[in-house]
Length: 341
Image 1 (cartoon, helix red, strand yellow):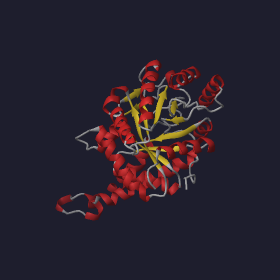
Image 2 (tube, one colour):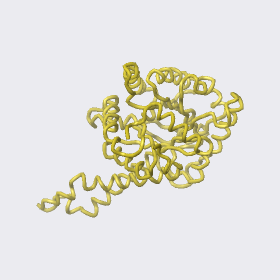
Image 3 (cartoon, one colour):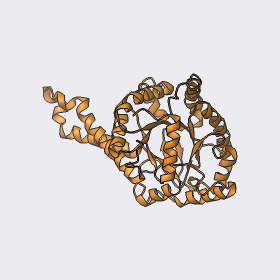
Image 4 (cartoon, helix red, strand yellow):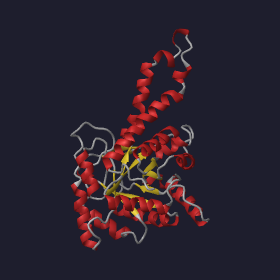
């Protein structure tokens, strides 16, 4: 199926919120990982989101080029062609744009998209994330207001982060402390600045102890019930129902099924999945190399075995491993079998 139009993307989120499930948002860095994500969504019969970080966008342009705008456009072009052959709908998203990267990444992308929309064409991406977790909330929301206005012109959805995610992703570091928990007051300030849809649709990453990366069980102290408390306070303040925010979950690696279920129950409709799928892609490659070491290496003057060092051989194993992890994510988030007809 083709990439979701802006209208279809909005419908996807509406269906997830009504049905109380969430879409996995899978970070990709290459054609192989993007193909694996598509395969996983198709096998789960789930629509989904494919996203790229600033480092991923740079890698897409060529590891020695590092042009994040060119890389983003290249990924979108590849996805548009390849996704047509898979029986699911996917949306494209730029992930975790910090303040120092706005003017060299999502702003020029959104300006290009605004020109596309003005000319009667579709935007390259369906949503973009402004990660203001490293700046004070007032500054975060001021920048979000500017980007939300631009997102309306580009017919895209803006993702904002209200709070701090611990760990590190693409150079953005968050300490693991009390700042990892967004408060109801933060939620109220967000609505006062951005509205409840009348200024443009946005989705919100409220933090409840989330940490990027992989950690042993018990290290991360998630409190997904905070999401319900914030939703209730904001809904009461603005007479906006019991789940006014469209929520995003970051840093969910290692989360229990119960924690994820509670987050979804409280309004999470998008969950980022990156660390787990990276490992799921790489682990089969390591196994392939170890099992076929004499074939992939030219040892002691031998010529090796072409079929074993052909990137397609180990690449198929890698894609299958990552696709299986995407299927698992769909199952845990309740999106399995929900694809749009």
